[in-house]
Image 1 (cartoon, helix red, strand yellow):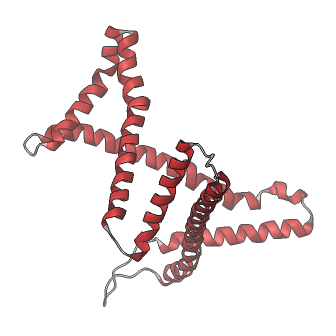
Image 2 (cartoon, rainbow, N blue to C red; image 1 turned 135 degrees about the vertical axis):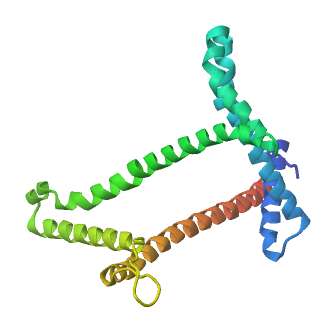
Image 3 (cartoon, rainbow, N blue to C red; image 1 turned 30 degrees about the vertical axis):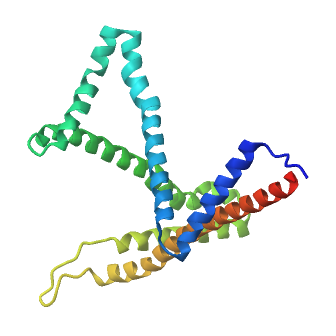
Length: 233
């Protein structure tokens, strides 16, 4: 009886199976080997992030301009290099104020990108989804289809309004008791909780499904390795 599997393939499969079983052993309790795997995973991700940052940002934006044109490249990277250097002062409690300029620039750019992404990726599509069912072009549809589209449009519009009402914080002061929102806004906000609960439930279901897919994939990997071992003899 001879073993015909390549050594590297066998070693890689055995290491993968061992790491998978050790991660699953966390269900029995926390221990040193599980923490070692987590530390190794974090270290690998940190190393990959550093390598990706160097290949995608540092080398093309810092070294390549200098290699192509030393004088023009130095002028091009002067401001970003100064701002990056100022960030190093944040590690010092005495000179950390020097890094506030770079930090303010990062926060401003990040917020601008976040707001722009939220408007283009969430707000505009949501407005389009609310308006499109009431488009006059839908009049060319059959009566049954047109009614279905209009009902869906009213449902989307109602869900959007009551959900936004839940996040309305314009409370008015009262003669007795703490400030409180208007009654009709309270009612709409109460109904908006149901739409929020449905949305969070769908998100959780999607995450749970993704977790089960990963679990099935790992179980399939273990079974494939066992079958590979059996076929190798």
